[in-house]
Structures are given as structure tokens and as C-alpha cells.
Amino acid sequence: MKPAQSQFTKEIRHFSLVTSANLIIGAVASAAGILYIIAAVLGLTAGHVSPELRVIAGAIAMVCFGLGVSVFHITLGISRGQKAIRDQLERESPAVSDERLTCLIVQMAAYYRDIRKTLGTIILIGPLCGLCVFVLGIVTGLEAFSLTTSGFSVTLDSRVMLLAQAITLAIVVSSLLSSHYVTRFATAWNHRIAEIEASECALKMTLGLDDQ
Image (cartoon, rainbow, N blue to C red):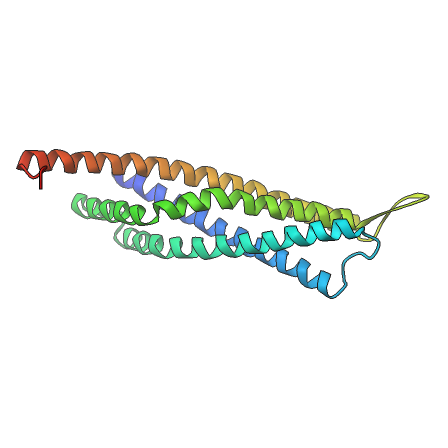
């Protein structure tokens, strides 16, 4: 496999994995938010918790749900276009001609131009979504404790709470790593787009079309 093809294939596959991770993060965040809201409405949250903590948890749950839906919806739109390019590349690999590889790269560049602003949005709200899940997990964990005259009592099995906190921590770490990779991906393609535009300007000047 040629170096250019290997690099392009690697980027497409990694980006596909990142979009899949973002879909999972969005789904988990929206599910966590709506489940807490439903539990609060039905009165299933811990009764000994202060009203202030319930209000804070409810607000975080609503934000978590909204961000989760946004991340899932935006990422789903991105993944559909990217999947079409990835499928074409996988069908023709490994014997992809230089001309065909160039065509796919140009196609990806055109697609990146379309989703550039959308990727910027994902870079911002992705980590916020993961952070909301993490904070909601902490607040929910606090609801499992009650302070009495004899000390602390726990309303849930400690192993269940530890597992839940581990999952929320994994979500926030995944969202940060995802945002970091998308930033690197965007930086690389911004550089390539700039090179393409510079070449287009040079070609126009050569053909005397720069004033048209």
C-alpha cells in the first residue's frame, strides 16, 4: 500500500471510530438525562436529599439530555457522509490507482469544507456533554448517601455506585479524547484545504483569470 493511501485510509478509519464513539456518548448522555428526569417526576429519587441538590441535579440532567441529543444528531449527520467515502475506499482497496485515490481525497476535501463548522461545534459540545454526564453521576452518587447522627448511610450497593462512577469517568475521558482527535483531524484538513486554495489561486494567475 502506498504511503499516501495508507495515511488516508488510517485517517478515515480513525475518524470513523471517533464518530462511533461520539454517537455512543450522545446516546448515553441523553439516556442518563431523561432517565433522571423521569425518576425525579415519578418520585423515585432519594427522599432524604435536600431540595437544592434535587434542583441542581434536575438542571444538569436537562442540560445533559439536550447536549446528548445534539451530539448524537450532529455526529449522525457527519458519519453518513464520511461512511460513503470510507465504503468506496474499502471496496477498492488495496489496489487503488493514484488517480482514484486523488479523486477520493478531493471528495473528502469537498466534504470537509461542508462539515468544517459542524466539526467545530462537536469539538466544543462533545467535552461539555461528557462533563455533564460525569457531574450528573457525581450528584446522583451523593444522593445515595444520607448523613445521620451516627454517620453516613448508603442507600445503594457500593459496587453499583463504583461501577456507575467508572462509566461516567470513561464517558468524560472518551469525550475529551474524541475532541482532541477531531481537533487534530480538522487542523490537518484545514492545512490541506489551504494548500488546495493556494494552488487554485496560482492556476488562476497563470491562466490570467485572477481578475474574473
